[in-house]
Image (tube, rainbow over the protein chains, first blue to last red):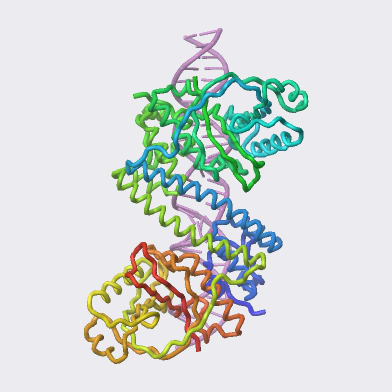
Length: 289
Length: 289
DNA sequence: GCTTGACTCTTCCCCTTGGGGAGGCCGCAC
DNA sequence: GTGCGGCCTCCCCAAGGGGAAGAGTCAAGC
């Protein structure tokens, strides 16, 4: 039970004295003993292991609150959580790499858009929808709910993109602004009525024929994560659509490409159900007249 | 010359009103016109492009000061700088990935060390050295100077690790603590005197025979970058050495593995000269009795 | 012209993870 | 006694905003 002063502990753990005092205050790394009279902190050498772990977790940019919780729980569980966190960091990093690429290329004049914009004709179609006001947090949950609902009861297969479900962002979705957001699944018109009666939770509507401008996203990039955080790819795609509209002198208003990106649609085309780890094909589209 | 209010500009640029006011204050993105009477900011729609760029650069975590400078200089030059910055980010990310791997594996009980520790016998040898007190900034420069010096005049080839130059950190090297640091190059003992006279800038010394414990670093990981920032790999290697010493009940003192990692040596073995982009084989070693 | 509601202004305090320094207490060596 | 090194607490600072308060402004409708 060898005790060391804060300075000694600092050298051995490679944490600054300042940081150690902060960790004490926040309950992340509490000295084994604090002398009442002097307030001197004394650490047990056995605490070094924990201190090194804290140092490493800080290098991974985990906030101190998270570190405190991790230290409190089972190591195996903690490992799983760190792994999950790291996956998120990796995804963000990949998206940022793409963004950096784009910025460098554009500034150096090599390329002005990252994603190709294409257009497509959408015929009139019948949709089973749920439209709800949800904020950033609830948006992801709504999607899961919708997918689960569709899987519950049999649905006629519609092949390819024609049958792919999609979402429409009718309003801004952020932490303090709650949509609305609509999830839609195309169904064969002739069976629409019958299916609608099977899905009392969903509403049936007919979407008129129109055209869409769209960009396909790299298939490992979901436009929004479970936390609701919009990935930089969203920005790249939006950038590409704006540039495309500018080039063609299309009025953004008639393109439904409002500054706030309202009315934008995201199509998900997955052979397998969407999970946290498997991302489907995605594209971002805006209808235009 | 269409002018828009800050709210409108905020929506179009996807920058918060708060951020826009901050950028104005810091001179990063100054509104085209500020009405004297009301203080209202009015932006030119042509500024949107710049605003979007700022938004993207912020996503890449560039500080506002850097962004201001980038906007001021030539786009092509800016692109080069961003690319350089991104390379640094990538290197850091790679190192952190490894660290995350290690932490997860250790916590889940799969593996307790990341790097293998080995030992080697070092015979008595003659060294041409330069030892100087340098802080974090100057350390890298000293290395370059040393390498340049050695390349200037002919030196007998010594094959393999026996001839590899290395550095010894005799004292803590950080922003406010300046070593000393010693750079050494082994030379054949029989030619030592003759060579030393050719290199008046270097001092000749004889290192006694000893043993070293060492870990090899993955060859894309320099232990310290040009900025002097120590990569997380350093931590992993040090961790491995400590664990190894603990396992063998070797007193860290006799291992010269002091808490502060003093006396630690880094060996560089390169067929090609070390540049900013090509990393040589590296290992981190500590002598022991 | 007036009202009203939506914007916008400045100013102040808050967050996080520490770094830096001032001023004071303690023990130890000379 | 005195100097020095370590340690304590307390306060200010950074970036990049978020949020609230209180007041002023703009534009549309009546």
